Length: 172
Image 1 (cartoon, helix red, strand yellow):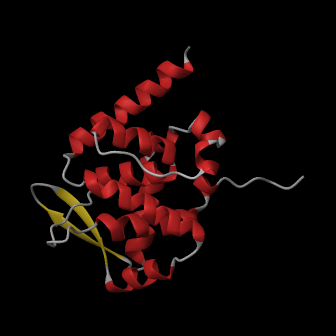
Image 2 (cartoon, rainbow, N blue to C red; image 1 turned 180 degrees about the horizontal axis):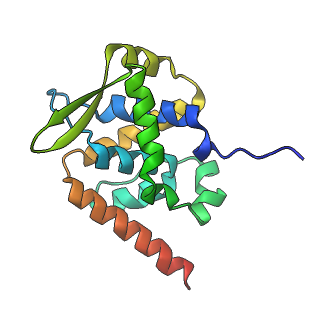
């Protein structure tokens, strides 16, 4: 029997996802830094869980995303893994690797903490991620752009509501 490797656990795949999330949300069109640890964590989780992303957008009143049938009817959509929401070590390892390879720049603001944006070489690498999977990741990121104007606390609140709805529906 061949082993099943979960995409959630594939380090290189997750590096690509974080690159695309950083490319999409690192800076606003006016150059304002937007992607802090909390947003990076939330957006990465949602991109990897499109059904949750859809519910999240609905809670915020931001419409919904067009998700593929394979995502809508997957095992993950029925019973998602919430462990990544509580495990910051994996994301820290991804960020450390990307910073070490000079693909992501880290900017520290005394009042607001750390922010991330792509370096020039990171932008080049992110643009090379052109498989169908990464195309879908980009589309999901685009649907989340409308949440950039929301505060981090409202994003956390909306995500908590989505997770509580899942717990209630699973308990029936």
